[in-house]
Image (cartoon, rainbow, N blue to C red):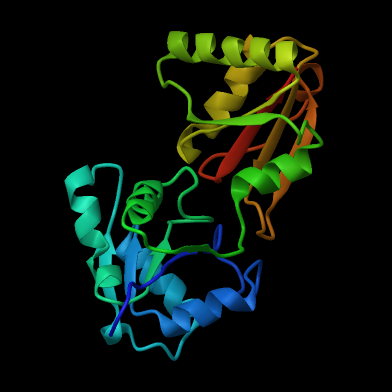
Length: 236
């Protein structure tokens, strides 16, 4: 086999969903043709492939893992199949690989090696939340996880609120699902009553919840976000 293989960034479901929910045909076509994968978690990646393509022979798959602890010197070795002419598929735990995901380091290395990158269309919880928020889609920033320490988290939230007020920028962040309720309580306590907050959880699922309103209004809203994947957005 001559030449380099390609690197396909393959989006997956944001939760337990129908195989056709939010995924175009290009995703199933890629999964059908690719046998080499770099994934965040092998078990969930195999389940995803089996759900989309039940006929795919699992024994034919060559799957390697990547996470935030993967050393930079090991990234190049994960791309060996591409150097040997095979295509590689990258699959995140949920949504789009390379966005708030360790797959970004693999993509960066692939560029250095001259490997062609093909990002495929699929659900991104960050963009879906922004789309559904009604907040500033022209200027926004994603901050990942905020500090766990209460004092540091308070300072971080106040900083995001000030920056949003100054620049009109929507400030997007996430929290570990089992701490979502504590995060919402902190937002109600720390932010100005006129600051708007969007909470978007279980996106693309039947239990989807999206609510945008001021902190003053949030004080009267009761919603259980425990263990539900959520996106938080601040707009001052």
